Image 1 (cartoon, one colour):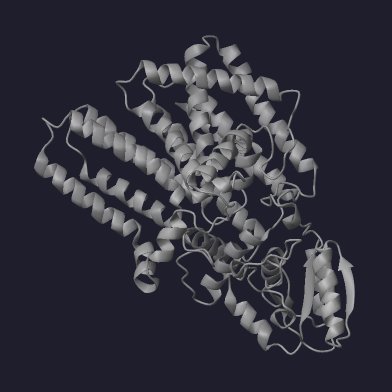
Image 2 (tube, rainbow, N blue to C red):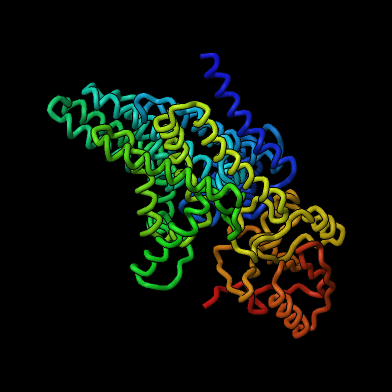
Length: 537
């Protein structure tokens, strides 16, 4: 028992230590999506706001912002607080994943190998469990809690026992909470519920129908309680947008019929998604990582998955292995047949790393009898992951970034210089693009407000979804003085110059890192007056 506690603590320290080193050395850029979480948390504390969803969206609940707000209340408005919350969430994910092993496998002996792979994961997992995008850390933890309660109930059903109503209520609550926080948790809920239904059907002769009815009622009530914020929003705003965004309407998709989009999504899954999942490349670019070790790591994963397939097919009587296999199957189907498959950036694949780590730990123990060979095999995967992480950390910029569109990869390290420049010249209001506006607002403590009404794409495409917090735009519109900031967009710079000249406006300009600043305009002019910041046809 003492050794088990030591090992558990050891892997938690390793996981937290690696992330802390990367944070101290500033390897994670502070991008706009994370800045929105920070601003939501700030507004919760200072303005009394109670957002239900991520600003500008209706499919990702605001739980992350409330957790960050708690952190801000204790430690102040700092970026590191946001990351600390994510680290704590991930450490809880590791703890619950280790606890899941004894419920899935019988017997279970590979939990510490699972913990090792979670402590030193791929670049993709390291990135999205350190930087906040509004709810992925919570989704992983809630998913594990769904699995924990579901597998506990499954064990009771298999023993033909009475369902514990408290556990039923707990499962319903977590599934409901996940429904609000992040729809990704559905890939956990569906296999769990199907397995419970199947086990209940098999034992229907001994199941107490009255107690079953009570259990279903408690489950539904608990689910409603967990998803209450979702229903509150639905009553206030209607359900149309909620339903459409839950199924991916907010994801930009390419043209084509349903079959063509499904084929494209399948290719994204097999080519781009799998290489990110196994740590062969970073999620933001096509570049092989730890190349000398990559073929060996891939071969190990293929062997582990081959052994797992044999185990699952050869032991159909046990439902537990099918539950975690069902997570992968449900995810794959959802990815291929919904618009989410158009975005193989990596964050959607996070639950699959939990599944892979569980499989790897157990299959290593079952098929490799000698401990030293087990350690060597898992060691290769851990070293491979660490090598890839170091490679990405060294290449700063971009560092470990959530931006996979090159035009959105901005070096924000000169942001303090930009803030100082704007303050000294009194340029506290203006216009810029999505990727600059929100980090600038948070890091300046909302003293400098720039509306994201400028396009960042080279072809000047723009969507009003970029304007996530319209109150900022209203402040800028009312200002008698505005500046403009662009990034990596020569075509936009050219158009601004032409339109300023056509309007007889004098101005000055300067470069601060990637930021191109147009300031001291002789009169205020707004994007809609010069044909910018409008929806593209």
